[in-house]
Amino acid sequence: MEQTNLLITGATGSVGTQLVKKLVNLKASFKVLVRNKEQGDLMAHLPQAQIIVGDLADNESLEKELQGIDNAFLLTNSSENAEQLQLNFVNAAHKVGVKQIVKLSQLAADEASPVRFLRYHAVVENRIKELGMNYTFLRPNLFMQGFTAFSHYIRKERKFYGSLGNASVSAVDIRDIAEVAAKALTEPDHENKIYNITGPEALTHFQMAEIFSRVLGTEITYVDISPEQMQGALTAAGFPEWQVGGLIEDYAHYARGEASEVFDTVPEITGHPAASFEQFVNDYKNFFN
Image: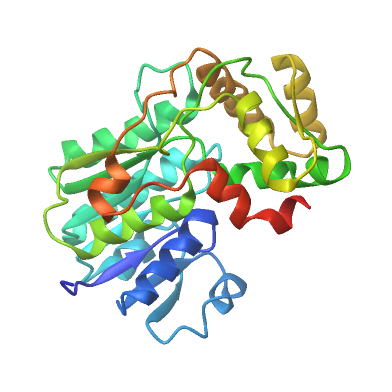
């Protein structure tokens, strides 16, 4: 493994947590940029991790923390200010000479997309290119681990919900995304590449319900609801308005069949098959039983 000076953002989120595990297994040293001391405390036990408390809204401190960094992993929450925060990071990284940004984006990122998440990811990608920086854009599909948000309903009602009809989606395990990210950060020859990251097959949510039923040993049903019902449920669950709108647009994108293509990126980069949905349910059984 080629050792570089690494900095990781988004390390306490779902993908970031898995990425940190992969880097620890690789015995790579890295800096972690967190928003507050409490987040840093979650990784204080890791000898390879140097914890830095910083703010992506503070350009001056960003430049300071990015000094001497070769490769940076860029990931933020998909919030209303995500685009600006990520642009702040990119501009600061360019200013101090960061060599490469590995950015977690999304499959089908495009500035002309009707999906706000896909638009903002594309804006940031294009800024990185415009600045002439080396990049690796990781564009994963729907996260399998996102289904853990339905764990309460699956346990109590034996149901989960969505608004994408009979469309297929090539959902991906976040552990595979993290492994591709770790490779891009620590190995050569990933510069200026775009990696579309999916699972090994495209499934409808009805087929996913069949897999849940088989693995959990009890009938689990997928209930298809209208976008309006979905919006109401997300709002009631406390999601911010901007994010609710984005998730509804995301589901419409899935419903149009725009997220069904399967890519071989995981086996090509990692050397092993992408995790199947059945493997995911098996590994996360405790969430659903």
